[in-house]
Length: 112
Image (tube, rainbow, N blue to C red; front, side, top):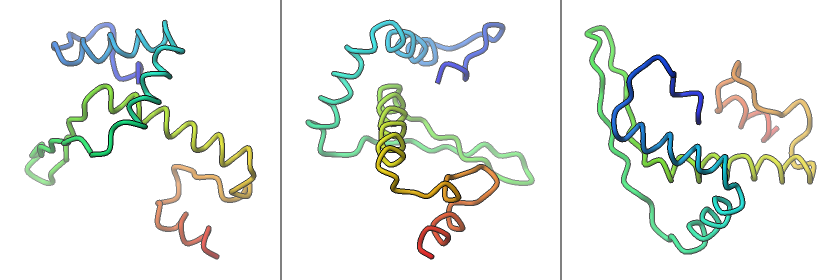
């Protein structure tokens, strides 16, 4: 999450807040983990995600605006699920996802 910010580029207020939350997560991992667990256990509804489109005249690029806490929670949940799946041997080695395969092909392989 921290790689999205470059030192040489000026950042706006929301990006500064997000960077602060990421740095706080690095400094206090136990506190961040407790907050994430509490959020996953208590929160029963999805948060709004705003989508805007950047028009390049030849095609549109969607730009998603997701809250920083949601990004941190999603990153934790993704890593934890892959850790548990790997530990339990849920997916064979040839099934590991890669950037070269689109998700539908990956799902097709797993179903076979």
